[in-house]
Length: 226
Image (cartoon, rainbow, N blue to C red; front, side):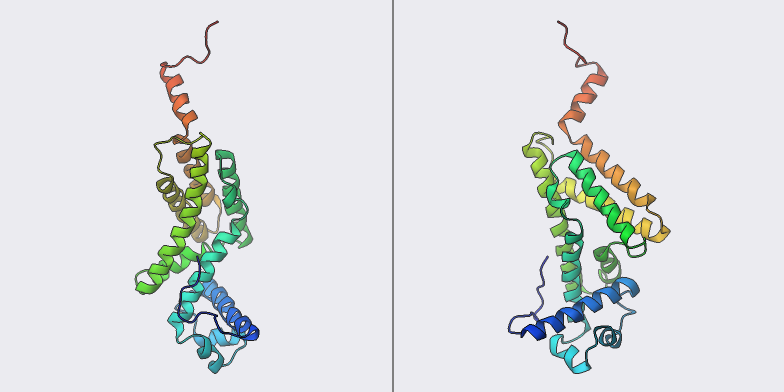
């Protein structure tokens, strides 16, 4: 997910671009820990160590700054899952990606939840421009998962009738729900359970799962007679 606001960095000096990035990073950290509504521009100025005139030089208002934060958090979310996200090509590698999700959760101490999910819960009903950018952020995440499921399909592991995009959305929905419950409970178990449910759902779309069902029903012998 890339920034799409009008206050882009084109034409800035190296120092100006650095200052702008610092403002966005400080705002991202503040809104992640405190929430968007509780974060004032005075808070941002203090955290980024910039003047009021500097802040308004780069961003016309708080909404413009928050749109940039959404873009930055979308990139952060995807980067935190690497390299596991781009290596999904089997159920085993899908589980390794799940291990990465759990590891990222543990690094936050269970307090932050998903940066995109946290922004969505606060902004989706209050800002159409923010909602649109959040949709794009989740779509970028789902697309990366979908690419992994497409690789599984190409390798003959996933049922040809499965729609990779639909499976990706189902898995992502499980992750988001698990992260929300884990954040609230300050306990990783809901996230671990949600991931396991997602893996089992993906397993049901695998060709070998259909083979196991046939064997259990007696329509296919377990071994061939000689």
